[in-house]
Image (cartoon, rainbow, N blue to C red; front, side, top):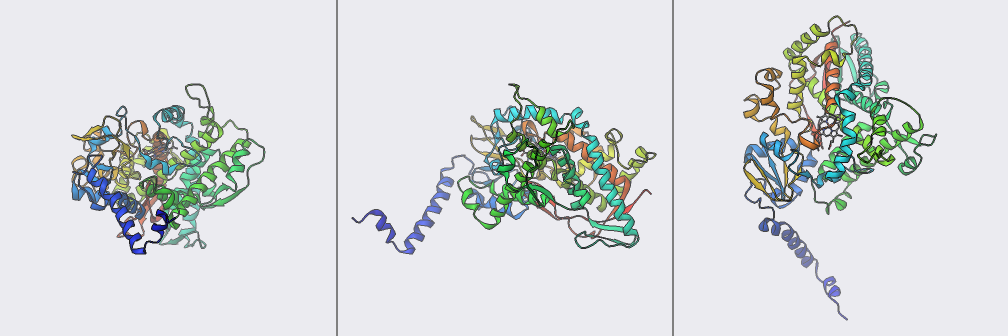
Length: 537
Ligand code: HEM
């Protein structure tokens, strides 16, 4: 019998191609015409209105924040950046889209960030998030974070010891061996400071989250132990033997994973399994697995050694939910991994960007160093304590200005409009629409920050009441999903920037070169080449 299938199989190639084109057009234009979210009136690039591919492509190019910023300059406050997604560039929208009580949830973008199991960052269910956040939030209270200060200071000391060593070799005209990437010239040490900030941040968070630093500062290299077999390592938790490990560059893995997840996450879930087959995405998928392998190896190792250290992992182990239940092993590993991812390059990218802007603005650098000299002058210890630097107004202004202008979390964090819809800045959005408020653009809002919003100028922080700025200052986000590690991040930045700027003077190697960045989930400097000279003997 001549079946329909036989008939279809006998069709010529041209007919098949015609069907494919018709199907694609139908899939893209029917929703555009039907306008299920009632957002056709919002302007934006035409391709973004009909397909998620536009945002996927933009995200994969590594400059999403800058591109969306340009779109807002062109189209105004509301821009449609995907068939169901409107970006809103208004500081007032922050308090609504991200607020407690408005019922918005994280969108399926965050599914692309899940490994091992959902952690605090990528959990989308409200009750599950509330359960986790209850356990984790007290670990990051100001009081608790101060218990982590000795670890932070210890690694800043190691960092300074290494740079002191290189500075004394550099003044003698030394040159680093191949791969070390430093050289001495004109009495200065010249290097790319970015990897150093990464070593520092990874060692601090590795020490806090896993009970031991990765040893990057000591090795002057990006290498972290990864479990060879994740299943075996998980199964062996608590055994006396550590799992079999191999070494991979953790910073590189984290970068690959961020770019992969941030560009996969903007694609519809049903496209993702297919897209993962493309070579670039395959590499990113591998990075996701390796990153999980780092956490699994480190937690497995830590659990073999009885310890009463006061660190993140110890506190996570002690934490209990409302029912008095502690976290299981897998959840514990997933949360330790969350802290590693959320608490490492956020801090290093921000420290590096602040260093760049200080090197590019010698007068700001001098003014900061003067404040530090007055406050810490007679102290021989090169590493500041939190107590010494927590209330230095210019230091705080420099850090805030660096967080604002660089915006390591620059993209609009996507939230789903709940049942009943949501009115934002006078516009009603129906259930299921995705909304986001791009921090990079909010941080450049001329109404909020003045006409020189694009300039790094810490003085602005003392010119207006701080609450005026706080309305448009969003480095840690707002509401129930805001950064739980904010107190730790602030303490780290205060100690890192004050200690390093008091000790060294910075100039840019190529003052005219643009500060290049690449963005996955975070905006990261590509490099920061500086000349360094010791200020104090
Ligand atoms: C300069 C440093 C930091 C910046 C700029 C920053 C920024 C942010 C932002 C914007 C979010 C919201 C993300 C979203 O909604 O998708 C976030 C969430 C989070 N951050 Fe941070 N962060 C920093 C440091 C840290 C540190 C040191 C830790 C902990 C070790 C940490 C842990 C977390 C966690 C666990 C979340 C998820 C919270 C939740 O969903 O409840 N962050 N951070």
